[in-house]
Amino acid sequence: MTHMTNLLARLQAATQGSAELDAAVLRAAGWKPARARGFGGYWRDPVDGVLRSPPKVTTSQDAIDALIEARGWEWYRAGKMITGVAMGVNPKPDAGLGETQWFRHPSAPLALCIAFVRALEAQEGGA
Picture (cartoon, rainbow, N blue to C red):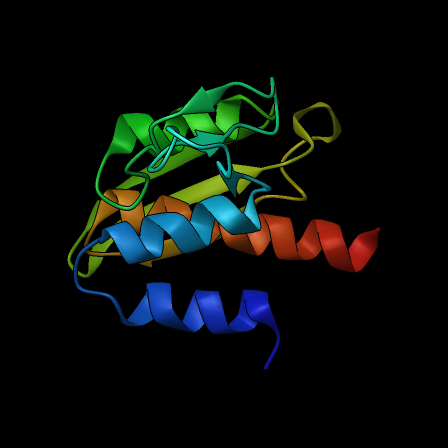
């Protein structure tokens, strides 16, 4: 099982977000924990290199939105359904919706995290 496949399985099985899942999603997105003395608990954002407190992407809609938008990607909410909310991530907005990864989950942040990791996995596979 690849790292991304394992992460997707953990996210899909989750009933709620956690700091452990946040860390796994951030690592998949290229974030790295700070190693410098005095900066424990901070992570380096790969987009601008700044040390930040790790965003709570598995519990905060705003945090996962910002992580996706920082890459220049788009995200979509298809609406609330009986079994949860459907969320999508499009890593190539200029190419239309064909690259969009969708997932439905009772938790909107988790649904979006799963769609985001699926889009990262597709990008790795297509690179």
